[in-house]
Amino acid sequence: MRIPHNPVFYDFEASQALDGFPIEVGWAFVANDGDLLISDSRLIQPVAEWNIDTRWEDDAQTLHGIDKAMLLAEGYHPYQVTRHMNAALQESVLFSDSPIDEKWLNDLYDVAGLSPSFEVRRTSCDTLIRSCAQANAIGAVELDRLILLARTLAPQIHRAQADALHWAWIWRAIQKPHLIDAKPFSVRISLE
Image 1 (cartoon, rainbow, N blue to C red):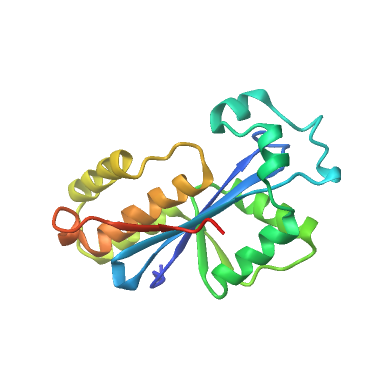
Image 2 (cartoon, rainbow, N blue to C red; image 1 turned 135 degrees about the horizontal axis):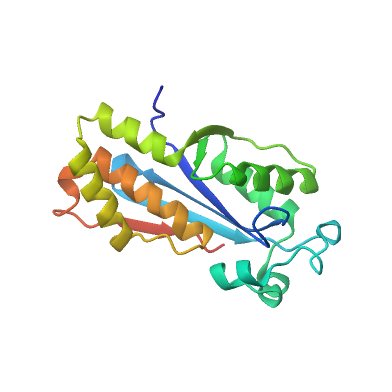
């Protein structure tokens, strides 16, 4: 596997597990030669054709904590979200931890009438991380330690930005393992 220099990790939350629609997208990547983690996210306002009344699952809402009122009040129209993503991620290579995220991405771009300005790889975050660890001569025990540390310092909490940041944190830890204890991670979160 060809390992990209600076992958972007992305994640979606959805109105329900399989037959829903995307309600939040987040992404994160390492910048400044490993000194900075950059992440961003957007809540996505549902459009009429997504039919929020029949495609909303209370169990999903309980998991991610995003309710309909929050989406309507704080969400961005899909066109705005995709334009922002295209500007922020132009020519990037994106990876996700679930194949369903690509479906949510396609649904979002389809309803916006735009095409992504970035490449989406079907390689999972986990596979990419393990390949990177192997390329950096990081053994299984050390990788497991880094993953366990990430669960504490950058936990996945079923919010798109935090879940993407989790993978970017592990990526940075593999690239710069000597900095984990010596230098804290800097995180810039865009709140445009």
